[in-house]
Image 1 (cartoon, rainbow, N blue to C red):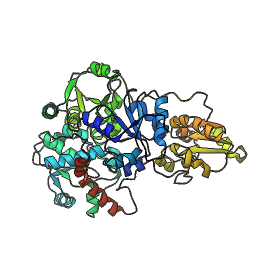
Image 2: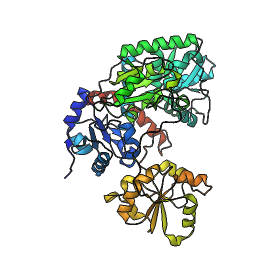
Image 3: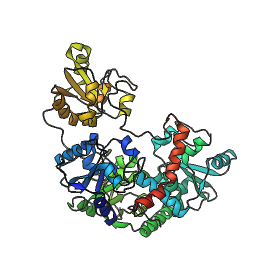
Length: 537
């Protein structure tokens, strides 16, 4: 019997409806999570708890409710979270099956709150859209048209509408007036599917862009299903100076500020946000919504980089505590206000830094470095040259285990290394049993950050010596050591990432059509669930 308290479906539902803070966490891997989960169940896999918990759950006394599908992951995660300092940890009664038996609605896919919100917006506002065939005809005829891709730049590089420009969603309102200065120019916004196309196009409409605006209906999925060709490897991006001249910036800022006010967004200061962050009774997230390059150049202490479009698209990943408050920063008065206007409509208490922030306040540089617990003491380590020597002589009986993501392993791994999911190192899922016998193990991942936390568990399970590769596979590669690629030596199933319908599934057209049908049905699912609190201004 579990030593942790149980929270019922009714308990969780009441907290959501009352906007009391709650972190409902699905601790399975991403693929099983994507098959079925409650609307506001954020995915925080057991395998990565130490790496992510202190960033995604910044208040240690936040009420946490864990769920799995009967694998035992939730209780293991509860033990780990208590070790990490969390004091209000419980399990969902009956897990996922209990939720379903109690009448709870379940959802497929990832980032579901955001995707459902996008469909809700379109249903309420009738966001203008054009089919792939219509946009292709406009491009072919040489019409005055610009296509703006609202995804991350790396997604855009993978595949894009011919001639389109990468303008991630949070940048659209700031940049569009400069990218389409003639009000007669038609502006088309696209993403891979529907959500960012809808939110991006509606953002431009809401912000008073004088141009005709439309979303590309069904994004690159719709384009592919129409039999039209995509580009690959494109590098067209907006200029960072676009939209920053006095006239266009003032227009964009005024509209963004007015929208935020209509949505109920409030103002705060850096100092007040810092005080809130240390408040033991309330969770506060602080996000800098500028581009990653701007963030890394200089940002305020305590603010995590979260480009505005992605924050709206992946809200539950950045801020899994439902009922928390979110504080946003930019340096232009446009991006934070636009992002906050959408978060507020998603029933989130949103604030924008409303003061003029001096450059001296942006005193940190580089990418976000989230807080993590110290690695367990007494680690035995080995460097890349020493490991190479050990592997050269089979008599040493060394087996390398790679606990990185499966995608990283497939891309490049130490020759002979076996990929294994940390969450499957126990009970019926003990994937160790299928591996060759070893006298000792060496653990690695991209940097060995995760490997260091896994080492004591592996040593306890096997009773054999365990070492951690210093610097991980990255250090191995930097030392000039050889690597393999491909999906060899997979000791665990590749369930750590859900395969999107546009990522080369066996039945691509069938998967894409099914995905679109699922998105169309999200508004009805929201109504059945009844806990969302979304509204549209």
